[in-house]
Structures are given as C-alpha cells and as structure tokens.
Image (tube, rainbow, N blue to C red; front, side, top):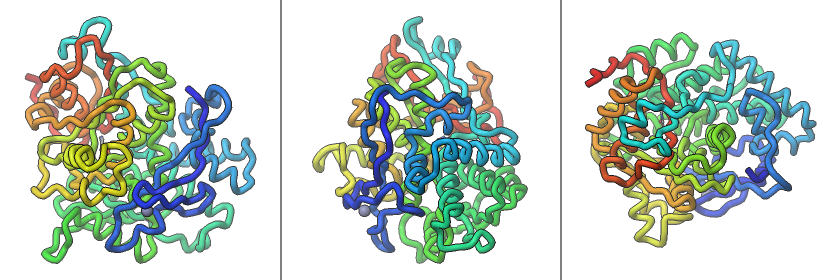
Length: 441
Ligand SMILES: Cc1ncc(COP(=O)(O)O)c(C=O)c1O
Ligand SMILES: [Zn+2]
C-alpha cells in the first residue's frame, strides 16, 4: 500500500484543525456541554513510495510510521528508535497483565462457514480472530493509542499533572471495552473508573473488579436527557477532570488511531484487494471507522459493510438521512438531521453493539461512501443463527456480539446482495464470556 503519514486532526463537523502535536487533544475544542456533535478525525498526507512495515510481530510497531501517535511523538523531538522502543516497552507492560502483548491476529478462510453460506471455491468467508487479542477483543487496539499518547505526553512534561497525582481514567461501557481499558490501566497502574449499566453483573463485573477498576452503576434517571446514562455520567466525570479513556471517537479521537491497525493487518496479511467486502458489526462505530479508514488510505477496492441489528440501527437511519440531505459523504455538519439516539429500548442477543447512538457515524459513512459499501440491518433471527453457525462451523469461541458481522453476511446472502464468488472478511472480535453456548441446530 502507498505510504501515508498522519498530518493533523480535523473536526468532521465544524472543520476546526488541531495539530497532531497537540497533547491531550481528545476532542474538538468546540465540543462543549450542550453541543457534542463534533469529532476529530485523523487526516493523513501522502508520503513517498510504498509503505514498508517495520519488522515486528507487533502490529503497532509494524505500522508505526502511519500512526498519528508516531507523528505526535516525533513532534516532541523523540528519535525514531526511541519511538519504536517506547511502543515495545509499553507492550511489555500490557503483556505482564494481559498474558499477551499486541500481536498480528490470525485471519483465514473458513471452509465450513463458506460452504454453509453457499460460497463457491473462488469465494468464501475469511475470519479474523480477535478473541485472543489483548483482553479478548479488538477493543484494546483503540485504547492502546490513547495510552501511548498519555504516557508519551506525561514523559515529555506535556501534561498539567505530576505522575503521583494522575487524574483518573474514565470509560462508559458494558463489556469488552471496559475490560480492555481496565487491563491497560492495570498494566501502567493508572486508576480507572468504569461507568456500567445498572443491570451489569456476572463475569464482566468480576473481571473488572479483579483488574482493580472502580465500578459505577448508572441507572436511567427521570431527569436524564435522551441517550445512554453511562455516557452522561462518564461525561460529567470527564468535565470534572478525569481522562476520557474509551472507544468513542467523539470522546477521545485517539481511539481512531489504533482502530486502523486491524485494517492494516487485513491488508498486509491478505493483500490490498484480496477481499470484495469487509462486513463489520457496528456499535459506537469506532471499529468500522478504523477499518474503513485503513481501506481508504490504501486505495483498496474492498467495500465496507456496516452491520447493526434490527433492535438498534441508528447508523442505517443516519445513512438514509444523510443521503436525502446532501449525500452520505462528509455529513458531519448535518449531524442533528442524521444521528440521534434510538428511541426504543435496544435489545438483541448481540448486546455489545446496542449503543443507542453510532458516535462515529460520520467516519463510517465516509468510508462506506468511498468504498461503495452500505449499511445492513440484520433481523434478530440472523443474529441468533450467526452465533450458532459460528460455533458449528469454526473452533473460535466467539460471543454473540463478536459474531454479529456474520449475521449481516447471512442477511445479505439471503437477499442475494453478496454473490457466491465474493470474498468476504469478517471479524470475530469478542470472546464468549458468561453467555451460554448456542444450540447448534
Ligand atoms: C465484540 C465486539 N465487536 C464489535 C463491537 C463494535 O465496535 P464499535 O463500538 O467500535 O462499533 C463491539 C463493541 O461495541 C464488540 O464488543
Ligand atoms: Zn468541531
């Protein structure tokens, strides 16, 4: 793929430019209480020649030169070698808590799955298995670039605190992201507070507790505005000084930096144009935004397809609203016309993607537009079928949320919207935790 370097952050809504050298540049400066319809996106510049990854089995090292973090670190005068070893040292700390550091995750054609979905020999389904990534899902990838940013800024004296008086980290999440954030926080002994739904219990809470996170339950209050009560409480805490350490680009743009690494892995492992489609489950949207951004930067012919469940599909609505108000690309200035919280109480077996707003909708719509992709809404029956099919046809112990991309593929195959010679990539991104195995038939 062609080489690029991160140049700056630019708000997709109001156009404000923030230099990549700005420490703690989590949000657009115009994102204030009462107007949170802003998100900083990373803008890259062309560099000379083909991109040559650094030799490493750690993708953050291999793709380092395209990371915004690398440009940020370079702007502080840090040498190339020191930037590489900073990542490696941080990765060692992560491994000491997570049992593994960041490594390329495997991707392979799954023949039984391909057969079951009616693909011919020329086509098929390629599954990227994130269930053995740090903290059991892809989420830690987003958080690692936030962590690198924080640690680098701190080590270069660019933060308004001393290491002994670090502000708490904060995240709103009900599962994989909270576990990933708490794992990284534990690795560097940084206190973290997680805002979880009132109903959260079981293995997720046990895991967060064992990682030393402070857990705050967030019941919906009568005087809450629309939207997720965990997000409201989280924002209050951030306004009071906590560091946003989540996986929504609207709250911390630096999650979008690491989110691209999974896309670069696909491209590197399979070739730039090996796949016709990447079909990705969408909750808050940061995951699909990162993968889509990687495809766009590489000039790939792969189409990005974003999957939501019928129980909660604000992105598909935003895509239609954007199309009818001026186009699906660069719709950030039309935020209020396109994206608002899903009105009914979201429900699905894939309960990890029930974000009632797709916070990173602008970037996902941009990528779907540029790659000639589209959103798809999977009926709940396909979500259930995908979970069973994933366990019947592969050996990956994926959760119902993690197999929700497959649900979208089932929906598209049923509608004959994906042909039998298509080559489709999906991501099994979350390990099964405390959920019963599916009945296999
Ligand atoms: C397993 C799994 N896959 C996919 C997603 C979707 O990621 P995003 O919220 O960035 O859209 C999530 C979390 O929301 C998840 O836990
Ligand atoms: Zn803005």
